[in-house]
Image (cartoon, rainbow, N blue to C red):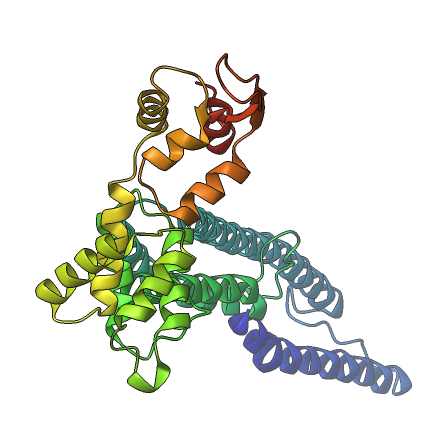
Length: 356
């Protein structure tokens, strides 16, 4: 186009001026000759005004044809640029959406999530570079005044790529820095790391349970001590709040074991104890069998059975209130008072939501 513009300004327009001057001069000459009754002047062959007009019309026609071809070629170039950008933008959008889906469905052990997140982070960096390259193509399309139509603007791709980068960065911080419980702030920097290791190595410890443990630690540990350790009173209260009630003898044995192993009830020792308790928890089948043995094969237990089990009064009271109660008629030889019994099977079935 620049060559054509130069030809118009530097060649065509001066030539048109010269042509007009030549035709005007020819007319003046003929007029003077006519006034003096002289013979009209015949220009050389192919140089008459009519010849000049014909040649000029042919030039204009050639210019028009050239312009049409140039315009068609220009439209092809614009279409090719538009298709190229559309292909690049579509591919980038698909890559971004694929990674967004991977991030949204990321699950499993933290170490596996970390490896996947790191791979995604590398690919996100590549996508950011490709988006920057696509911006150059977008600028050329804008300069060519291409109609964008349904193409995705480069600004949208840049925004989506930035969101993707922010999301994977947040995911990595979540994994690497132990940001498993953002609502809690533990003064001991090891808390987050310990929490992460527990989540990584013990698949039976759920996120909600870890959250409950950390919240319990925060509640019972003295903040002025910097979340360093629990004393025996605080540990007993913390365990009781989590539903783990022990006799004095059993609790002192637990506390002495922790003190001997860790020197004090640190956050790590506290979580390790709870993991042990969780892993040692009986299955529903084991609990039913334990109750059956306690009831000597019966489907219900009595208050006397619970007392013989040597469990804490707190636990006995809880089970008496929680288990469905029935009334068994008094046996012969007794004082005639009906005896309350408890349906342990119905209680366990309801607790574990699995009929046995």
